[in-house]
Image (cartoon, rainbow, N blue to C red; front, side, top):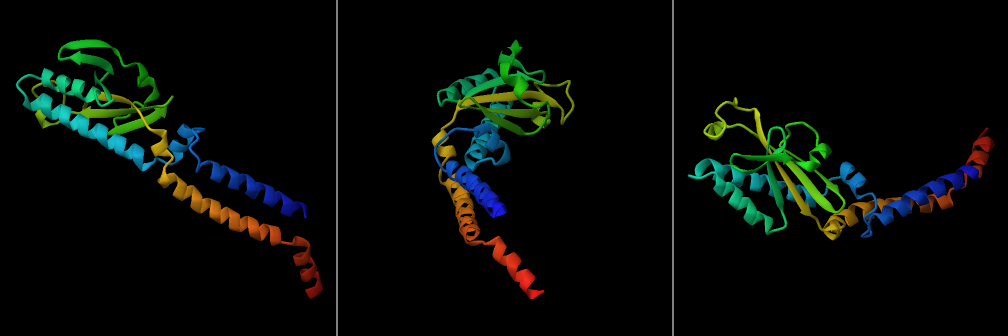
Length: 202
């Protein structure tokens, strides 16, 4: 019977953990995000890519590249802070004005992936790498096509209630039902009876 009680206790622990993830609690948010990225965060990443494309288009096509930074100032009113940096992650406050390196760059990898993100202390951070294309030649004449020419870093607060929404409740709800059914059969399971039947057959 000891093995039965062991499996019951183990199942109950998993069931409690699964039910807890359906509640609006923020424990282990970053750990869970590494295993399962909510569609909400994918939409935030998509927003960063749209802003990056708009910034590059304004910078490339306008008569004055500074208009692209003015566009980012307007974006900041929507609670989205954007830092334009060079390939070494030094902040470019305006065309030709280079400042100190971006402070949170150490939390990102050094890869040239299109977009990378993480959450920390209630904030969403994203990094979008910009590689040289044909339209970038006027501003970056000495860089070959396909090479990294800059990085855009994004910071914004995010709504934890959206993160713990129906999407998560559905996933952990199904898991909780499965664990509950398993627990029901474990309570009905009598290992000694099965062993007795095996000996009776022989």
